[in-house]
Length: 349
Image (tube, rainbow, N blue to C red; front, side, top):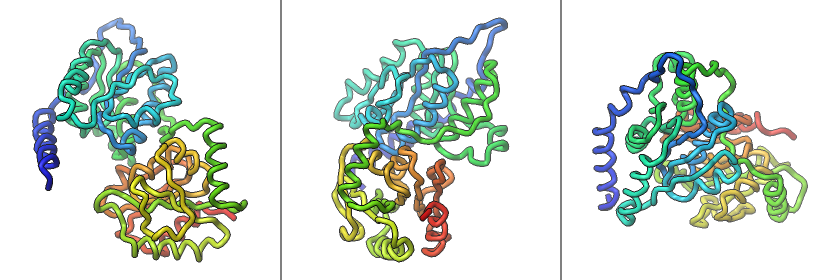
């Protein structure tokens, strides 16, 4: 293990120990008799730089906008990926950005934390209950109402999918808001959505048409993932061959990762892009997207395309794609033929 990874692991353990009880006194909002609740300025905290985690925040942002249409939202994030993800969310007022490498930008890092105290909000929401820094930032933020993210027993009993990292903060927020007099909300939880413009989708179709050069529908695969979430070349080549035999009337293309590598040795028509909105626009024009659990899987889901996620290490109850017919497959408990039968439910000739 590298020195920086060791330091980060120690830092995370330390932060967890000092913040695990943070927010316990805010379990229920403190309402004074006759107090008028007017929520317009909202801070949502999710200090994580990964693409997937920023995309998984989009349902919560939609929920807040749906509940408070006239609100202005500040996002507290890490890194710059939130800018393209939330580019078309008009209610986003400001993106407060932590540097990705705090030890290299220590003064800026501290300055961003301190800035949270200088602005008044009506409501602060921690986007991930397991984020130690998110809980601490929620506590120091200046607001009368704060949602730390702990899911109580009522929510756990009522919603079987409460473990999902996108759904959990929404269920918790809804429960909290009922204590403020906001009517109970039983609508379906919003799906991930990067809010592609029509012009972006049209451009994505032009790029896709240049790859496939026919009118057949297209299945897109993404064969890369981080760490032990990544399946082997042998695994992907067997799956790719089975897709070819199962769906001869479909194009099968591969989206390449930033490393420009392929687990099927570039056997399929492929494309490469570093622009996440362009990537999403191309995926939007495909019939099905298939990948292991990773940020691009969530990007496909956020393009509103039926998405199949392969899981072998991470928990699908927490990270599975949902909405638009999407689903997860646990490859430890299923076979190649099980996967094809499941994908059949999304394929229509």
